[in-house]
Length: 241
Ligand SMILES: O=P(O)(O)OC[C@H]1O[C@](O)(CO)[C@@H](O)[C@@H]1O
Image 1 (cartoon, helix red, strand yellow):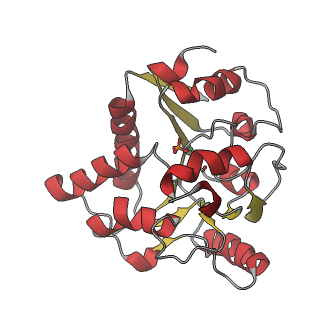
Image 2 (cartoon, helix red, strand yellow):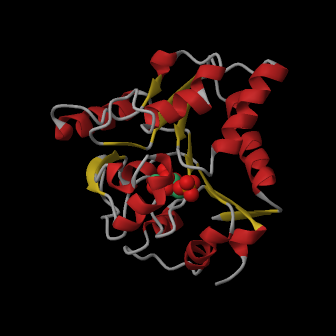
């Protein structure tokens, strides 16, 4: 795992943006795995700016997102479908039929998980996966204790995760209790992974990850098994706990 230490959130976002644009430049049709949450927002802003100000095109890009809440309509203001549209897709020239998220409203959720896995496979796999990091070490919505062999599946969200994400809902009890997420095995099949972390809130998680021991109670340590991971971490997140 390569660790890139950067000064702050802006520099983290800029470094991630550069890596994505470089991948787009060197691959004819690129499949990006995308994440939500507060962390990648700056990166999306910079990617949008590169389209609007420098004419970078996303026509050769297809995307798959890591996760979506179960039970939310795609147009719900707090769904990840809405997040992606508002922060990224609506501002760029990507073909919207090439952007994919799990359907949290599917009647048969098990079937939806299989469909999503199949879709990723037919897209040729993920060239570059962007990840945020949960304070409890989750990646996607893979909570502590999740099998590293898991593929796309339905998860019960940890209380701490629901609490952390309550800021995106009117009330904490409106945060869905379940989500569909790519599994750790699905994530590890990406050809390349970029993990982003910024701020003191992530420093405990980063300290644990940098210990370098694989622990099922800390899902992000699964990344230690992947041959091409770049971690972009700012100074605050690197302060040892
Ligand atoms: O970037 P944030 O908001 O700190 O969230 C970290 C992680 O938690 C999630 O928001 C899920 O709880 C992920 O989507 C994200 O990668």
